Image (cartoon, rainbow, N blue to C red; front, side, top):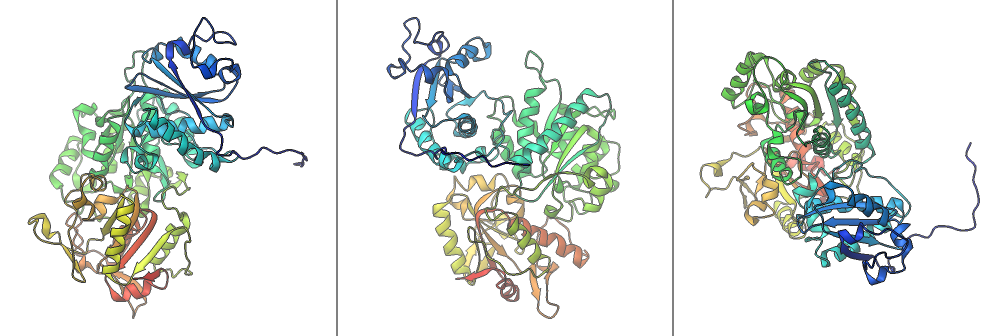
Length: 585
């Protein structure tokens, strides 16, 4: 039974009047502080003389660097910690120490600031960080919001000291930051991480040739890719010998070409990782990844991101390459899926899965996945906390209910821009306004238009109310390239460019592949208006067709962090959706 204990005092929330103190000194001087005074004639900084409490008994954050590499840490005794680092051969490469202090620091704050600095500095590009990512978990504490606001001031001070190049806002817009293995994990992710690590330890210590797969289930925006990248870095760091050589073959499989190339580009700058650590499905049978064809698993741990996008032979376009992999495994293509490839070549597969995001006829149906993964899929590790959309799970559930013809109670989301434009002119104008403010604003659409510009770049693909648009000119990192090219930023992206990515604002064109049947009172799919050449849909059951076209729009409508704007081509569907989504010009 809890008891209330009265107190006459309280801890005040931090106030922004007190400045941060940043002290720069040589690392050799810092590691030689031995007494409760500035010893042996060493003068670190004249402001530190006589300030023994700061050096020996106060929470602080510090940065070690040599101009090219850096290490970020936190301590309650700077002098003691520097002495420990001085005895560590791994820290001998540094020549400068930077002590960061504030009179309102406490242990929770410096731990939080350490994590923030690691995440931002890893993506900033000024230094190559030598930190591992163990312990990078998010935790709440008293007055955290105030300390978060204060951190912005600290970061600007570090920029003035040439310890960082870019602003916080600039860094947070980059893909390097979004997919960094130094991101803080929330509680859901931390619990999932601990369960996975326990299973990994058991598998690596056991003698079984193959062990039970792990499934991590989560809706869009729950941080599946972030957790997969975090695990890749942690496991690669953990499974090395005393000389730094790997003791286990660990890979991250990314089925989608665009996201795979993004991850390869961003992770090759992370110490301990290489672009080749991120592979595609066909790479499972590459000799470079240890494949010999003898039936023995050639990969110890495989993290399968976006595993709902693994393919089957039916309806696939690249049939020859699919057959080649199946032949290498001694199997017939007609009865084999890419999920079978994983199970045949990997000792411990870890699947990051969301059946709601299976968006093509070549994707493996959920019932097949259920049959092959059995109890692992029936009892997954679940991620429940929404990290992308500011409106949270409520918005995702609302969108899903509308698309599923469930007629939910109309509602609004005060902290989120969800609106339906009556005219395409207003939709396009609003897009331009948001793009000018937020670089990660993009316009996307369902596959309701042919890709005419693929063969003739002078042609337009989409014309609505006299406004002309072109489909994306690349599948390779389309979202990121839009930050470098104004022309790319003004293209319309398809589902294959956007799945797995975050946007600031998503502008979604709902084409006439999805309509509203007033007589039947339901949303329906129109096969003749669906033009994705990557998915063969002729003769498909109408309900099956509706399911995956609906899932495409579900993915498109759950990309926006700050807001989602819609334009709907079918007048009846536009009228129907206006019952649930605020209509604007």
